[in-house]
Length: 398
Image 1 (cartoon, one colour):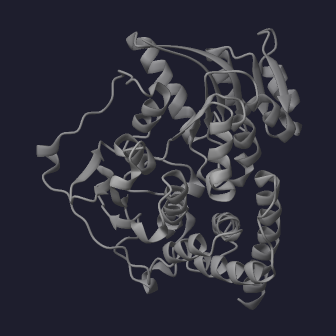
Image 2 (spheres, helix red, strand yellow; image 1 turned 90 degrees about the vertical axis):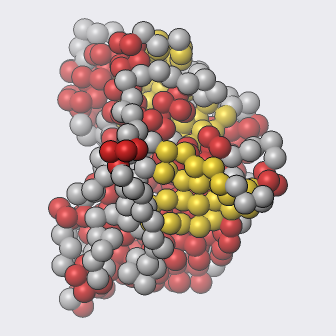
């Protein structure tokens, strides 16, 4: 029986909903017992209230102050406290619990993840942007507090499960797998007219809109390369990416003796969440099972960085260091959202990232500071301003 007192930051998003669904399945199966301290969400008040009525947390927070009245009304008579705004989410993240799921998408989740990292709880990190922006400072903060950071991304969860943390010198390289996204076989010319509807239709995974766009551009794999470098103290030249369309092998660790260990499973986010929730134990739940004969074969190919330049740009940002990974992340977020808002062409997402990296990095912005979170957010803000300016110029030139 796995017992945890938990907080879910970003409970109404894809990962947050999957976490609560997993907890419900484990409780139904009699293998888990969970007490929820905090739920936080965005503008989807109906879903947030429904989750709160099911799990009876002590506190529910919406990121949108204008939605507080609606949230409070929806939970009238339940005795559940409500709050709103970024400061309230950060405060909620510091409440004493065993386990915190950090699943707020993008740099918006950075302050709350940073706050949770200082509590001594296990930090289940789905918000890769926090690690991309804060780097090893986030890992150090978790360790100093007596907590543990467990990655939730399927690729990093796969590596985490087989990586010899007590003997990292045995590892020769890490190999991250990528589905290739919905446009893996398209030429650059064929990508010119890509619409948001096509970009969010991932062939294997069920994800939010922004992350689906990141998968389509392979910016997501770039962010994951940066994340892997920090998580496993691995230099960029020892981290490779291979396209694996079936999304069955989630990543591999190659050892110095030539052996390679891989973690396999169906493309189901609840599996890495279950690993993070129960670690170092295992949680029994009605998980989908791998049927290798039914699959028949697994295929692999090298990524095409000419068609998907965001992957190479991320590696360049990692090698540049300093504020460059934060700049990459900020420019990508702004560009991806502009694409979803139909203000930017699909192929211009990478162009905006490249231009922003050149302009902001060259302007001398640095992430060097005693407070890595504040420093990263300062770089993030400058990069966002520059990216929006670049998008505006592209729109005027169109």
